Image 1 (cartoon, one colour):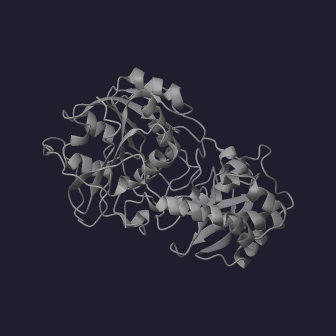
Image 2 (cartoon, rainbow, N blue to C red):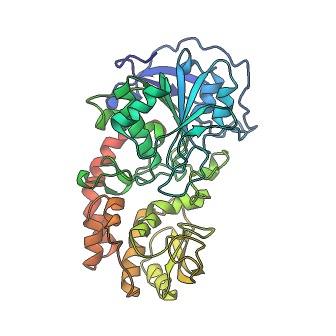
Image 3 (cartoon, rainbow, N blue to C red):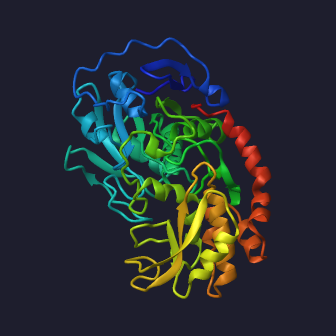
Length: 437
């Protein structure tokens, strides 16, 4: 079965139990309306454990489980997830759903890095069977549009459930897997249910340049800010209302309880599972929206070290970079000279000099400005600085403006000023889809 295209639903919530079901249309009105909730059977099997702290964040999956999976009743379910799709007691949701007779789980779909998370950047695990459950696992990476719609049809599902931990940056591909799944589900006549999780770096504001459509790719399908400051459920509502409005998907979003926009992941009470091999900690995620820009250069972004995206460098760099970066007096962060030898990726086995980011004030820290400041100063102090030949930096930043301004010798404030108007417009649109205080 599928949901009526005019019956797009958003599972609204306040602290405690699942709240009323609000009609979430394809447009901005989605977040606010309400209607009486249907009766949902109580949990009778395989309950999801909750921590003693009643004030901690409870994910969309926890709330779905606590209400007996009523949103999935009578549907053949396919789950898009990876190792981050866990319960509060660290069980995987696929194992929990498969063991529960109230849920007809028939397929699993893996994103970049794969369902079990073994592939490095730009790779996936391919198709196969999950050895724990015997369920077929389909690979979504590199698929979109009708090709992905055909995968959903062949899998025999009615509803796509999405539950993956994001890191809050436009070029982190899981949000575009969500977008592609929504678009493909609409083409195939399937519904989508998004189980929400925290933005691990908080969500008080958006930051950085907004993508320009000529630079769209899998690291940015649509014009949103580089650090969007939204959760997966909020993005799903925005995607449906702004970018898929001509053919919206039948969408449900299951909100969290207890999450506020100022919370960083360490304050949620939830266990952290690395969402990809090179984001091992919440501190990595905090820096990622800025330091991942170095993927567009010939410098190491710290892959092959124990602190990827927190250390940056290259052969021939020394303390002068940290000195130049600290001289910018960027809020919330210090830069310390660092030396490391990557085990893989750029400069494999070669000693590198560079910087390590030390964030001392999370509320003041702007990772995008920090990343721009590091680009500007690296170019000034290191004669070997170069962009990747394919201008990958333009895909990451969403246009050629950052690259051309850095090359022209512009400073951080001038570069940030260049994207300010676009960011202000995006912030006004974003506001209509926010679900949390």
